[in-house]
Image (cartoon, rainbow, N blue to C red; front, side, top):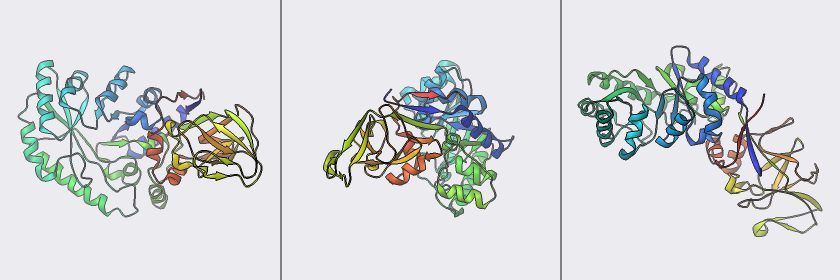
Length: 376
């Protein structure tokens, strides 16, 4: 293997247990496994997650079908858009579909009649992100139309916070919460009383347990990653004693060891010139694998338990490291993300260097890289 990803199943179980305790026994826990389980490998981690989660969340019908093929029997919510021509699979498999379009509702009703099965939906309420969802002012009319469609059952209602993880100021989250409450009241006036009401994702579950309603949706936190530095700081300030342990370690091996003379260039574009005699190693990974090109001359990897710098440009399938001070041999193990000895490179570290967020770092890990469940 050119590179591989190791998954710590026990850390995953511990993280999920942490969130179950945070939200309390009266609140169901949905763990989101979209985007290849945030890069961790849907087929590897979903069976473990399903041991403890009450619900699973995905983005698409294809992801839902992949979960079903694993033999998982927990309820599955499709949180992204589904084309009307894919609705048969939603109804046939009993998936819960996010709903904010009447044409999708009509397709659900038609397939519910054909299959003699209920089409359960969760209405997405727009409260401030201005992405998919129904505006609170349109809820009563929207629900009134839905209730005339045979076979469509309004099982849930939910919203998504726009700024809850990016700031220590809770005012916008409180504003969204008020709008959501008003929309829930409108739902009730229209005669709809959804069984499942949910708003909080990871940051909300940690910082605002009172906003968990009947269910919380946890994504990145289940995999041991904090949504943002602000979330972590706010949790500490509020006395929320929460420990999250990263689940994923990305490894590769040294493909070649080279000696470089003073003045030699390394990599495309002549962006790095050696200022001393150096030993470098070539790694058989690059931006195709998800190791961002912005890590050129900026990233670090772990060799023999120490952090060493990336030198030259990250190429499509190759990356070079300066190992002059630590030494290296062919096939030495290299950690690109995770721990080696006492040293660690976190998703947050890589995100900061590329000007992004841990979500992107993880989600862009090439799905073809083998994910291996670590033996504990």
